[in-house]
Amino acid sequence: MGEAYIVAATRTAGGRKGGKLKDWHPVDLGAVVLNDLMDRTGADPALVEDVVMGCVGQVGEQAINVARNAVLASRLPESVPGTSVDRQCGSSQQALHFAAQAVMSGSMDVVIAAGVESMTRVPMGLSAALPAQNGFGNYMSPRMQARYPNIQFSQFMGAEMVAEKYGLTKDEIDEYSYQSHQRAIAATQAGAFKNEIVGIEITDAEGNVTVHNIDEGIRFDASLDGIKGVKLLREGGRLTAASSSQICDGASGVMVVSEKGLKELGVKPLARIHHLSLLGHDPVIMLEAPIPATERALKKAGMSVDDIDLFEVNEAFGSVPVAFIKHLKADREKVNANGGAIALGHPLGASGTKLMATLLNGLEARGGKYGLQTMCEGGGMANVTIVERL
Image (cartoon, rainbow, N blue to C red; front, side):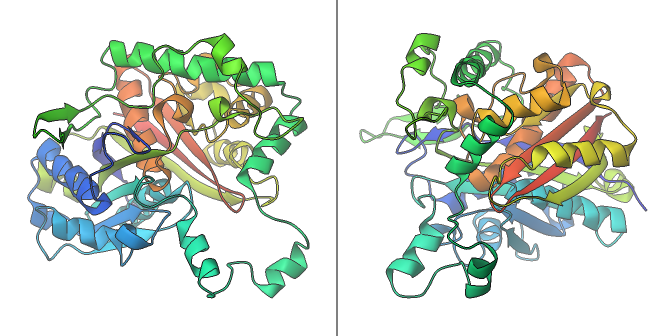
């Protein structure tokens, strides 16, 4: 089987709900990322054989194959196809897996994996809510309901169940959340995200144009006391809005190529795909899946936790990375070293390749060799990707 290499990675800076990216159509956000990958590689756009784009809310402005629409809004030629992927929060990480598998199989040489989500313009849950509200049914079939009677799948409850199972206190989750902001602040001020962010032009009501290139969700004035004082999501729970990922608008992408693609493009690889895997787990506790998925991935790769130089573990809720660190005995300094979704935002379908851009830049900055990315996903799943920096 052939190798798969990542030759470019990019992302937009996150936009808060109703924030700086609110006037950007998600298709056009996706197109910006596609164009930036061309700029970063100098590739002939006609060499791109497919665009695989993750997106969770495939309705409204993100409907009718957002990947193909982003291609048509970009400077890629019409000969480049596109397909949209929904693996919930892991959608664009799965897009990366599909792109890598196409390249490793020898069926393609240059593929873009990307993701987009405008949570301002296509609110979370809209693809399920609209049909239900208009008499077109619910996604839970009678047979699903028979298997899981009287169960309403909930990420919020899953996050609380993870906290309870792993004996996490509200204080340690709050302290982790504060750390996410502090790390994101330090990374932003040090310019750590500069190489991975493509600037987005914003025009205000007066016609003034600025460039959005700083993640809008970071609370530069965050305090631990302030985080601890936020109201609980449910009575008796451990989680609050301050220890949860932020609603976010954004897009991201990576270019994946074969050895033949490397020669055709004439570029140096950033990293080699070392391992790809996926695990389905309990859909009720739901968000625990990254833990057993990572254990299995490391075993299959013949590696240990200590072999990994950096981890990106999506901060859907603070309990997820805290449980990950506690159970796997991972070095806390290696996990989400530049902050995570609690501070930077979680643009659902765009988060997978967004985290990969951050992971690759983090490995480069620290001189690390191996990076591992994992993502908890609706339905109780988790993708795991291990890359080797070159």
